[in-house]
Image (tube, rainbow, N blue to C red; front, side, top):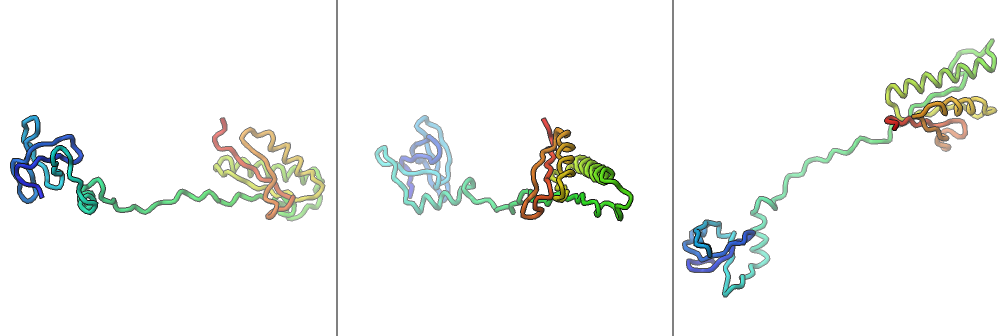
Length: 182
């Protein structure tokens, strides 16, 4: 309890002085420099012979709860960042998926059609900013696979790797399109 005539120090401020008057909530003190200042009772502590009376933990905790700085702000719902596990675009280059019948087509015609389809799909993905494409070429003799590697090697912003073995086996390659090449 703070009374008139007590020497007090202000919390959170380097101010101390003699109590001039006290009411239920406020204290008017005369500082060492001769100024009169008003503070709330809970903002000052009594000093005895140059030493502070240490308030109890409960008093400190109660005063801190009342201060606005320590009041908990209501929690906002946390929005999660966009999931990065978008399934890749798949392009099946098996010839029977591209044409109804291969009748009258040479092997060269088939590979050319498959490469044209791969080029068209890759250009579409670059234009639409699709980051990954899986080209399913099949196992076979490896002619289409080698042609695709050569073809994709001509692009600067494309990285080629084998596709997921568990899902595609040895018959597919994954293309990663670098969206902002340096």
